[in-house]
Image 1 (cartoon, one colour):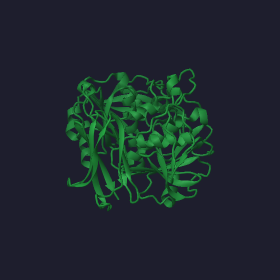
Image 2 (cartoon, rainbow, N blue to C red):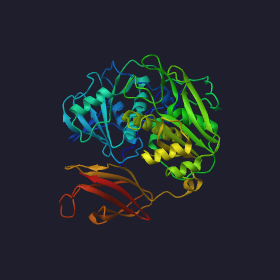
Image 3 (cartoon, rainbow, N blue to C red):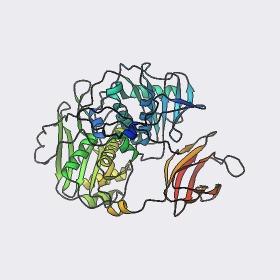
Image 4 (tube, helix red, strand yellow):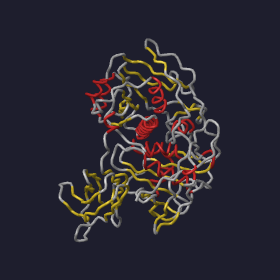
Length: 510
């Protein structure tokens, strides 16, 4: 069964959002990991009062000076949040290095499974380190940001901090012996930090470039009224939207969330951004373009060519409605009223692609925090990127990588009855010697049948039909057929047939 999300009461201070009832305040869990057989069971994730916007504005990377004395709850929240980050590809795994051992995270069971014994950390002062193995750099970047925001939520109480490090990534690839290369490793620990900060870093905008128009953006709300963990719990992608255009306030908030300035200073005294990088001196190259009925504009977070001065401005590059051109160039939801295009300077650079993934995570998470529907499309192929660049007449040197469709959720989608069967959690890979558990939500009580098929639709395994009540349930499969022999490596579909509907999960058997 699904583990309950525990809520954690924290004392509220002025300027911070904390509305937890006495009932939820009682659901406090132990922070230390507990053994679960051969695995280490992590604590349940807890909800902190800080919003997505507050954490995004307050996040900064601490590259050194770590101490290992962090509660186990911090690790539990971090790896949970990283796993909740949206994916554009089909593969992503997390490895966790502690002073004791190197583990692989099993999100279905909420455990750390031993991968290699011994201390394989890059930084001997860290509390733990997380390596991301993913099929796409964008999916790695999305997880990076989720983990950094999750640890930032513990900053004021525990001095918790983290930093993505390319040197730690190199170390992981040399020593961890993962199935695929680690795309980015993050180092977490206790460090000298500062309080969460609601200060907006660009209160005065710069002048528009010559011979262009400028759209004055509204100062974003850096406090927020949501809880980051609760937003992650409800994070999803939609395809149907109402036609109502977003307000300028909402567009301003989304642009800032995607790539806006923050009050912290990086090495060299340069102002920081909501987007982290794997090098402390690596220049941010991700750019964001708004595509609306009123025209197309490029977001500016710096003034001119200077990296030392912040900005928050939308340069109107065209007053022509280019949305139909964009829809013709790439398969995006046609009903969305607004689109945001994330471009990079070099699509061949893995770090640039990770930055695009961070921007994508921020766009979707901020949209969901505002109660909006959103859909990420990408990464774009070379042909799609060229078509989008032509359709929007983007500046030279900017390669479109992702498109985010956003708007109010279609009213018929909101009012329509949800699917009677929904898979809520499952691993995508089944390794030899392991089993897989699929957690699903049954909204209508009745008989449930579970079958496993190969990609040609041939049944390879079937569980007896059982009557289930409405609510959360789970099913496990050890990767064998009716004869008890393990199936051949390949792709399979687990189908859960309930009253009035079916849910499917694709599984790769290694």
